[in-house]
Image 1 (cartoon, rainbow, N blue to C red):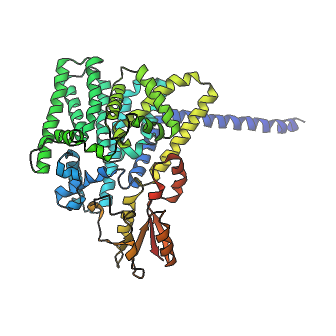
Image 2 (cartoon, helix red, strand yellow):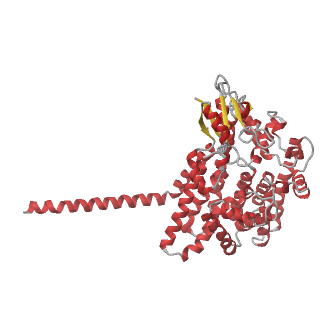
Image 3 (cartoon, helix red, strand yellow):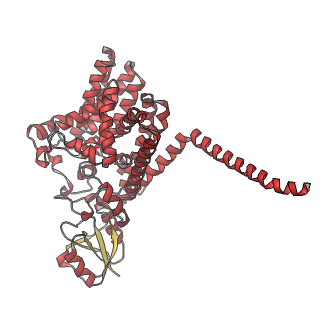
Length: 510
């Protein structure tokens, strides 16, 4: 009888022990995650940024390439005038960034890295690492601006908000000025009353941001007013900031004059051509609220509504924060300029997560638990989908990715002939030719002159070109490559990050 009782009781004891062990494992895992949350976020961000840097081949806007890379190539003697934008002749662009690119290209030449696609990838990886470091420095300084329980969310969102990785890996003037803005804000928050040396270095960073992109002055205007009206810098700090800024401007004026071959003050040239002569307006004008519509729809309507609401809340509740002065000054001044593009806001996009956290701090306490869970789950899902999309695709519609594919095919013994329409030719950007990426000889023919029997022919078309596609399919061509993977089209239907009708498709004979 005793043996029977023991047999009936032991299974229950075993179940209790097993349950306690499972609860202990779950508690250990929860404590481990909480203790190492920042390390986990950091590792995840590094992986996301590196994958994005490798896959984000090309450029979001032609200015990113033709006014930096091709400028550097021209000075190195590696391209022709067909790759130079009109801004070179007008001498309106600062040359600090092209000179930095020249240095990277020379180093690549010394180690035998002559593939331009690899060189461009190296630039993006360098920017990814720099932006990760700058963002980490900024978040550590600015975390006191949010409640302690939201510190980890602020850190995660500042690194992994779905629009940021693809922006932060770009070797563009917008991203370089964004880097300077993060460093400047971090120091302004960290050192409320800076020493003369610290103020001088802040002036240097401000000057570099201005020389990377002149529109950085819009953010500097707000930060200058903050320093005078809110933080009340002393005259020594003000003079030190101006001294550092002046040193950079004078140095870059000498650099620009050397680059262009004659004395030139590019900030004035830029203002005279684009504002006085109104050349910038020739590229399109938008109403004053154009940027508000972009902020509403581009990050998806879900995030857009939250962002606009958070901008109002953050600006009212945290009006003494330098982040508010920088962002709102930048947005208002840009809204007064007729020509508007989303990329113009890229320098201040790393500040968006802070405003979102501020908005949630205010609105979240008025929501019940169920609504909070639903809202956070919805935002998390949208953000994750956006990250997957942006990590997996080349820049834009993948024109440079198609160039890379065609150049890789030209390494075959018979070489390659590219047949394309004017619209689908990847080696053509409006009136310019990206000489930098023409690494190997590629013969370009019009699609109507297609030598159908010649081996080594790659036909490139857009998805909407049904007439030419049906003709080449009948002649034995099959699809071999897409500039943007087709599986991303379903995600893009929601996020609208590229024009699916402008994706390039390569066809070759089997």
